[in-house]
Image 1 (cartoon, helix red, strand yellow):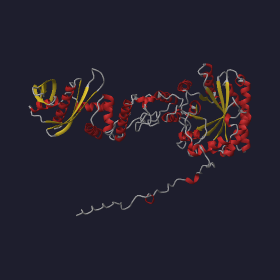
Image 2 (spheres, rainbow, N blue to C red; image 1 turned 180 degrees about the horizontal axis):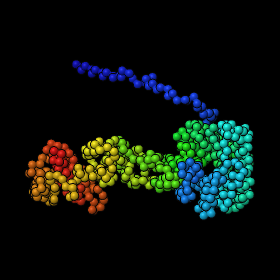
Image 3 (cartoon, rainbow, N blue to C red; image 1 turned 45 degrees about the vertical axis):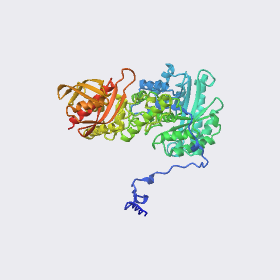
Image 4 (spheres, rainbow, N blue to C red; image 1 turned 45 degrees about the horizontal axis):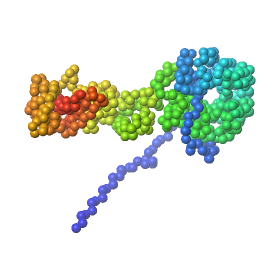
Length: 599
């Protein structure tokens, strides 16, 4: 006879399911009518989405110009010099060092680094100027004696500037750029003759149609072509055309479209260094720079940690480290990121946010319990894989959850990777004990101790430091001579074999404050010790046991962990000793003492 079919479970359906129709966002009431949309680029056969960045672009640091001009307290000459020296040490080969026609301070700084020989011969300095003759002359004059130098000329080309600021036509605005370029050539020929005729100085030219993001593409192209007609780029005579997002106005994808369009339509493209200069007004400068490189940009201009006007320039540190994290050499040395950060904070007199990518205090730190557990397991898996392949961890591909790079590669230690608060779990606490104290807790003991820490964070709030975790662990499991506690203190133990092949154990201990000798027999030292404890009325059963060496070598300490049922109460004990037997006996004592302590 067939059994009746089991009834099908009834599906549980919410009375009112959550759907798009039930999520009722309300109009904000903000004056959205005041703002227009950015212009899309008609480029249906765009190719940049299929490109990958496989090599670092050229970098230009503008910390000393665009970054400095945005500071509440602009850098003193000493702070400027410290920033310049840092950029050189890191490996930047193109550095914008100032706006020498804007005032004596910038002019004097440019002269000082030239005259004091602070500029390596393979580093090109750049200086900015507007398109006025007296400013151009002063700018070129500041470069006398430089090994390699570039003059960077700019003028705004966007419609609102043509209409409101210059009150001129497209042709008039274009002529500003063309005339300015001609003046740069004339003054360079006059003041830096050796530069233009193969002497000891190499001279270059950069032009920026400022507010490129709001400039009509056909007009931006027309202006750049007019500038190139004057400069006459050719083999060995590059021109840098910088297309700045002076104010970030569109999505990074639109920025990339504009770069691909310009790269396709520029004549003499092989002699052009196409440069991108994103600002972060929409919070997407890094993405805009990366997509611009995919779309044809040869160089990126920015500042360390995104310093700059308003919301800042694109962050060169994040850009470089993004490449590093994908296995692409950024050609810039970020291996001492805390030194870089400290110097930038001193020079700019502005702190780096603790969540700043790659450099903030908390970016390699996990508080969440699930994150900590995954990180702990990731480190263990890396160690196991490296051992199995006969390699070091540094020689295999990095694969630790929640850590996009190895903190050690930028000069960080692992000490701050896992920090404990009320959101933490057993994994993070276990990681701290293993990493700092070579104690590899069994899983069930991790659960037990994490509850103790959780109770501490719930009652006291805030973060529990590694030192506090260790202090709590010692107080809970490891009585010391300085801080003794518990009913039993082990003094010595002497093991021998019985005639039946078992083990006999003689233990000298302090029990309830009195010196006591305990004896017992059993199958192994732990069993013999449990038998001895029975003589003083302690009922113990061992449920689980684990041990490991805490280091290598003949003097290595052993750690033992014993899960016991003491008078029906289940808890763990821990013991450490140079002798593995004594370590295991101490672990049993730890569990017994804890049972009486919590009674």
